[in-house]
Length: 110
Image (tube, rainbow, N blue to C red; front, side, top):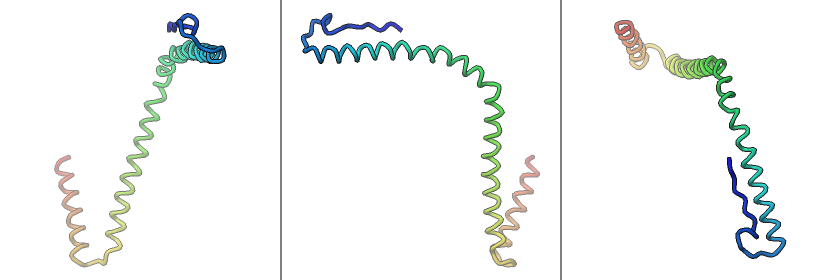
């Protein structure tokens, strides 16, 4: 990365010595930051390539865990609600019949 450095004297601006030294210090710091910022970026493609072999299994395990928690939470909550209802009424019969119909539809489609 090519960073042009211009001091206050070179730009033709007039400034007192304290402003001039402060501006030169800022310019030097920015020049150093620009030159060192490219060094880690050069190795980033290697780091990404090294992450590949372990990234896919880790992502797969994370997605499995999230899916498991979501399905467990949904099914557990539904079963908890159904079991907490009084048995033998229209609501419990509707849940039972709706669940049986969903299982039958799933078996026919699969």
